Image (cartoon, rainbow over all chains, first blue to last red; front, side, top):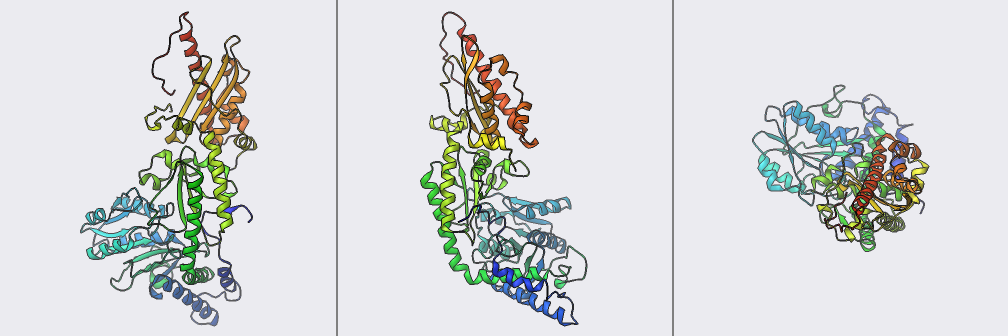
Length: 404
Length: 144
């Protein structure tokens, strides 16, 4: 084991060497443009793209023709939401999403609000799940799209996607899901899950950055989206631009590996995650898990270490790469909006750490991180006036704090 | 974010961590910040009544590394100063000493506030002890 240790696999993942091997020839000898229809260089590239399309389709249970390649999940989310909004503008102008969505979805929805669309931001319950009854009640005859993520990037909570899709289908509303954290991590099947449109990205499943895809259902219902970029009419007119062939080959290979290894990998991830959780809970009092443990990615743990501030905690484990919901670690200087949406006070959000376990982590690494964290939390609690007050029996919520 | 060596040093080896009995007459306690803001500093001074010199100082801080370093540094600077001299410590001195980046200036402001609050608490106690008959403080102690 050699620090630094990477436990931030919701941010990005290390590319699997097998993926790199598959990609390399497509940078050099097979460099053709997949849209070149009249020579062998083009045919070779097109064949590789077709293989990748099939590999992705197989992983999520769709047909290859339903895969549109993009530059990543942000583009896929934009294309799905704006593309549906534009295509179905005559049918209605209402979109439903959730408070804990990724910014690529939330900010896209906000942009549409400026153009006259109406957006409902569903709150989530304490465990991070949306309330299905609330979803049902929010759908109106003007609703054209529901966009709810499959699994959350901070707390790993898996939404009841199949039920959401069923409700949407009953009401004749399209259902888009941002699947980036779930695909390749847990079984995802667009038919069982009643998904109409789904965003996919390469770099969250041990593939390359800068390549993604959008699943767009062709049958029952046939979904249409308006292209958001003009050009050569690639990808059945939905996304123009010369295909990133090496990236696409990498995304395809990453999906093929994920499909082969998913059952084993899920078990291993859950084992490592639970080992980390158990060790932290055994070593420390007053730690809280954020979000449902039951409906959760096996790779994710999000924990608040009460009375300790997140950034100082990260400083103490500076050879371990994780994220914190603390304001000090965010660009906006606001604590995590996802944790706040669960109803967590700012104090708990400030004290939270997100662990994202991945394919390349080992038991040894998990033990090292757990032991180190226990030490650092204890040290920082010795330094914490809040811990001291809590031990004296003072109710911190009743204290009148002096601040600007 | 990259921390300066001095911030790292105070974070790794915080000086003067701990607490004095806050009811003692020669102890001044300042507690500033709020958990929801991500920073709470408790800073205490113990003053030698005869000389008016701060003979000891202690802190406990909930906050980022820069907040911990700012309060740790403040306790070092307080020791050996008179109360009046201690009031001259400015947040900008802390910023310069620790090379704090602009987003961490509020940590130094909080440390200055904590010093002022501790001194103010000490002076309040002195004033109430001034009369010959010692008045027992019965009012519920609030965190200030």
